[in-house]
Amino acid sequence: MFFTKLLILFIIVPVIELYILIEVGKKIGSLSVIGVIILTGILGAYLVKSQGFMILKKIQNDIDEGILPGDSLIQGAIILAGGILLLTPGFITDIVGFIFLMPFSRKVVKNYLLKWLKGKIKEGNFYYREF
Image (cartoon, rainbow, N blue to C red; front, side):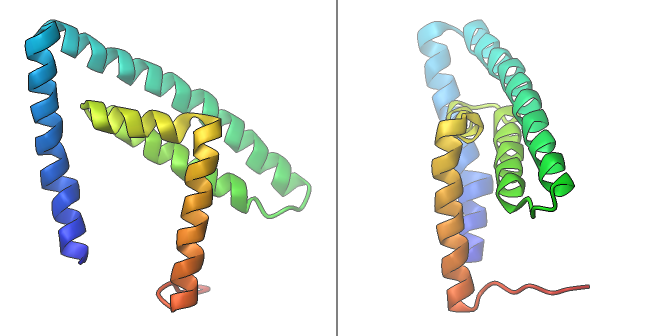
């Protein structure tokens, strides 16, 4: 099962991305596609920076107030994943990356992630170790 997920992640997704890039390049031109890739990279970097700083500030405020910043840490991880996806050339990864960076859609992703984690904990597939 794990191998199948890795296969999809590292082989199938890039092949689909390449296919889409080639087909879009045929329609709007290769220079336009390169421009879109550069534009999404710049816009993504800006969003990651601004959203990331907001989350870091929230984490610092929570810690200063003695609150465990669990929610903010999860949002920070989602923002990081979104940034990585935006750095990866391709339209599908860009769409998912932007979904991870928009606060309203990030909330949906966070709720899904929390539900998934709770399910893993209930199944006994998730362990916490203190070092």
